Length: 373
Image (cartoon, rainbow, N blue to C red):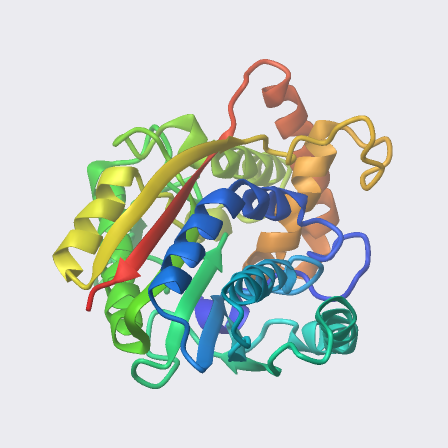
């Protein structure tokens, strides 16, 4: 599976789209707002360039795409107003993989610009928004062209499925993660090591690329799924994948899915712990960590009584729709489109049963750092 070609959030605005099922990601952005604000204000106290480059890496589509950008612009506007100086020209770059739904974002830009003019008036410096398709595990921008980089709910996606999960010989191919699609409590040490090494390689490449693109004193704000423990098999890190594997294997038992198909699918995902993040940042050496905090997130985003987005759906159904909006493109590529409705129906039921017995939540890591001079 070529991740760059098949990984994208569900497009459009129908009931299974990412636009309609991204409450968890919206909640994550909200939880990181305080940390992001501190980092941006600290940067602006040091220097406000005449032209400021801002990038959102893994911007996806839907209502979340421009929400963080709007908050950053609000902070810049407020700080410049307090200092009595004009706002800089803003160059905003929205990045995601080439197969993402950029048309949806472009369609929302006229309203975005209108809102800027309405709220901030004609004195507000010009803002230019453009798309930069490509993988953030390599270079995307000219050297020292960025002053603020943000990425939310993206860096837990790997550049590829870790190599070494299949062992081939002249006679046969042996899968190391049989009956599973990600790390599980029954995974061998080889599976754990393969995923850990792939994350180290990818995150190191990410840091090296950004170290060349961010100007001295610029800030980087990252938020990704992770775990509190150093043990990668903890429930907060991997159990949503375990339940998806169970749903697939239930279909295998009924002859609806080939077992070999499940054995040969492995998610290009990794939820790191704090120690792994710190190790790679220190090893690369270009950034100073200002904040690194962990937050817990309900699997369905914590829908309250006033939220009518999901109607009368159960928690399991809400979680299934959220996960489907994110991973369906990969599963459809590997298993085919015909099983998707049945798979996520079973997944929702499996999740509902699990959550009725446990208080497992996602762990989200939020990191702010400054580019050294």
